Amino acid sequence: MKEELINKAYEIAKERYAAVGVDTEKVMETMQNFHLSLHCWQADDVTGFEVQAGSLTGGIQATGNYPGKARNIDELRADILKAASYIPGTHRLNLHEIYGDFQGKVVDRDEVEPEHFKSWIEWGKENNMKLDFNSTSFSHPKSGDLSLANPDEGIRNFWIEHTKRCRAVAEEMGKAQGDPCIMNLWVHDGSKDITVNRMKYRALLKDSLDQIFATEYKNMKDCIESKVFGIGLESYTVGSNDFYIGYGAKNNKMITLDTGHFHPTESVADKVSSLLLYVPELMLHVSRPVRWDSDHVTIMDDPTMELFSEIVRCNALDRVHYGLDYFDASINRIGAYVIGSRAAQKCMVRALLEPIAKLREYEANGQGFQRLALLEEEKALPWNAVWDMFCLKNNVPVGEEFIAEVEKYEAEVTSKR
Image (cartoon, rainbow, N blue to C red):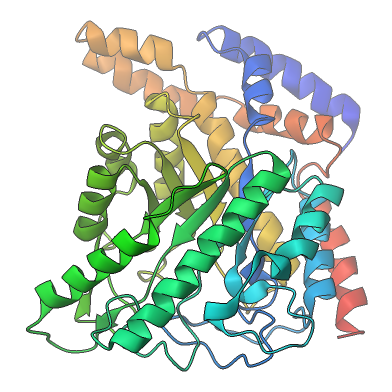
């Protein structure tokens, strides 16, 4: 797209938004501080680098067999950097524990150390990409249906030790990068059929969490993530939304909202204002749940736009962290990164461009017609011109220009992998 046309369109947009009280320059300045946490598992279908790695378990599935999957740590890093080159702004990288640099050695989950992520920390510094982290309870011989809620003391202690060590890894990451590492805790624990011991398993999970969080750290932040159910664990999930909201509110822990982890008709956006009254911060895992937690690539759909709008309306930009969480193996994996990341950013641009001051004035005055009319009219304002200018200022492709470039990269790597 010609730079002259981008500038012309932006100047018109700038004037249109100024008429409704929105400063587009301020919006772009805010967007520079909007950092996504890119999920490492999109590039290799949640395989990781454990020598003893097995097939996916815990209700997780990556569907499709598109060519070009990253096969090792170097290929995965190259893919992430390539994807980031098409995404405006600076962003973070979200790692699962199974993505450690294990150097071809068998390292069990209860043996992981910060040294296994030393090369990631160095890589992050070299590429201006700060790190976030996740413990990994699935795809292991001791995973089964229960990990932190397992009544078998040996198995439960194994996963407690694993998660403690993951927190220690996150602490070292945060210390090294001079910015807290967000450590997400999600376990798949549940039951395929009816259980008569709901309280028992939840009491065990609570006790496990109490032990895990007993050590306080200064350079990492904990977040806890719920789920409705997992494939093969449909009847009961120990770590439900109610469980983690209660635990998080009582223990001042960050809550993770995964957009695929709720019933299809639930509004995740509606949870933001309620939770922020009781917990310090929120972490988002943004995907597109076509049929519940199907983890399709994020797009500019209504639920995602509503979620980002609610964050802005709550004045919560400094209390919410933004991660992506999908793994589509049916299309170009780099393209999936770029589509989802840019879609999330577009949703935030739209949210920041909302004429919220005028809308709140109408609402305070009981002017329902005016409020609804402006909400409808602002949908047709030229937000895309502001987005194009943001891309131009960040030296990334504008509009559909990235498609051909990703296709070229795809052809190169597919021939080698």
